[in-house]
Length: 285
Image (cartoon, rainbow, N blue to C red; front, side, top):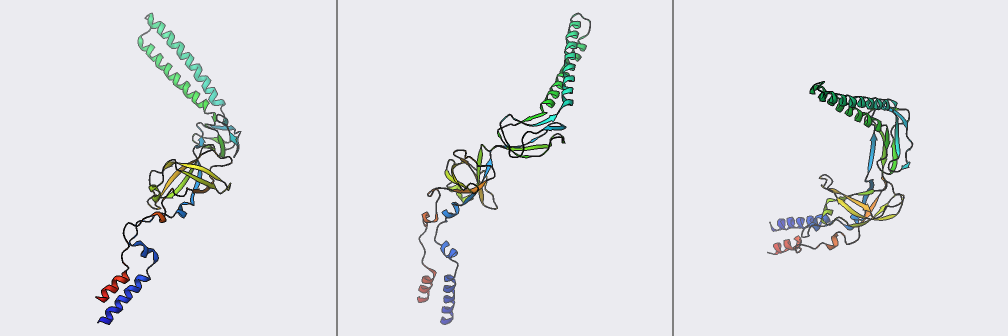
């Protein structure tokens, strides 16, 4: 019986010795932090703060598109112009109708003062005047839609239509982007919330330019992705770097000492005696 008991204890001791190192280290040690080497290679992508896809507000024929893919433009430059003879004619008709309604109201008010007509006729003419004003305003909006100006300075990403093509309302025309204001989007492990803060400095190295640029954290994501256990962090270049475009990617590097490492984690509890020694004591007893 004693021999069988000793064999069982010996097998148990051997199984403890052969346990994976990760499990053997987990006992008696506090919660470990992310190694600094993992945080030195945080991948990120450059994204524009402002970008847009401009759409048509009217049904018309594209007359002119001065800028091609990749061309730079200034705020207010003409991006798309339509053939709008029909809408300008409707605007002229609306202006003429408004003038006629205004004269009718004046004439009716004079007749009403002389008791030539009743108040109802005056009210109706005034209502017709308001209707003509609304029609004129609509015609003005349609004519304004004949020219699409750049809402900001930037570059053309892609033209989605061509001159002499007919478009309908809400059809996409051109995609534009501003490369003057750029953000850096980083994906960090959710445990980084223990040390990441706004205005925290880091260096972002771009793959395309092979250069490093100083930057800082400007925003921290509002939620953690429950599947990947990551969070989005947004940074901003200290100074707009020349030649950097939206879509470029690279790696972020935070200064040493910014985040805790495994070497700085203290043990919360004293290491317990090894299982082998405890078993040996039991065998002796």
